[in-house]
Length: 128
Length: 97
Length: 139
Image 1 (cartoon, each protein chain N blue to C red):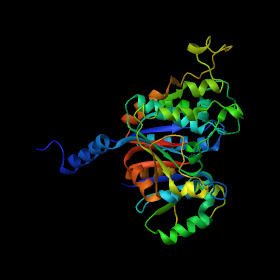
Image 2 (image 1 turned 180 degrees about the vertical axis):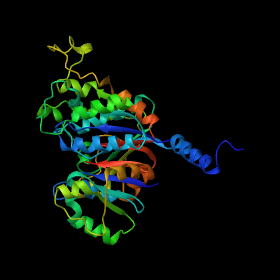
Image 3 (image 1 turned 90 degrees about the vertical axis):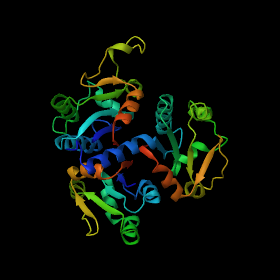
Image 4 (image 1 turned 90 degrees about the horizontal axis):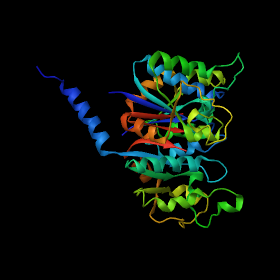
């Protein structure tokens, strides 16, 4: 019964995020049930649709997208962490006086409550 | 009660490794990841390898090689795939970053 | 014909024991308050877990011990003083608050904290308490 939950706290342009992605990819390729990835602190920046990384550099978002579609890997964004970093979803547009929503829809808008759920179900919780 | 400790920063710049070693127990495993690869030559690691030989110290091969860090014999070089396996041969994982 | 082998049964029982008897989350606080948001981010996690009635314990090590010392006033530097929320730990049933003795000594800090119920532990006991938890996050 190997259930793995991962917390990501680093931004998409950081080399530290590559380590997290490679870890998740390795776990999935080994057939481990990765029940979800929770993006907290600067990790929430990953959900910004407008993030543009130079084309000759590692494309973190492309990797998450591929994992999401291939394995139905749930990608949870902590909405409070996201909002203070300028990521807005449809639901909070008016509250935040934001011009437009920019949340990449491979990510699910969540709160810390989701982290509680993931921790409850997971046999291992790994933080990056 | 074995714990897998992931250290990600250089101990020449950060207290993380010292704090980790303060509470790591024998039969735990310490993996040097990202900039923690620079720790292969840090006095704390050298000391640990001598004084606590039962505490396994490992390093991610590609991370060390990228940084031109040569792994001493007492430290095992592993892959990210190995890291996943280690996750499940220990009871929990603590990341020091 | 048995549904499970003896080994499988024993593994399941061991996992069940871990899931049922260990405390859910240990939060290690390693950063000083104010200059960065790690302390507040950690507190937010602690309160959510507690409000979901999960057992969560707080550990303070390294510069994290600065979050506990008395006489602080974040308002002087225009910081919303999240440290005041520490007084709500009892209300949230966050009972176990541990601080690393060595970290206090290194920083020449006394055992004068802005909250009650703080247990000052040696490294060995700090490690022992950590081992009682299912998951560990560090901020």
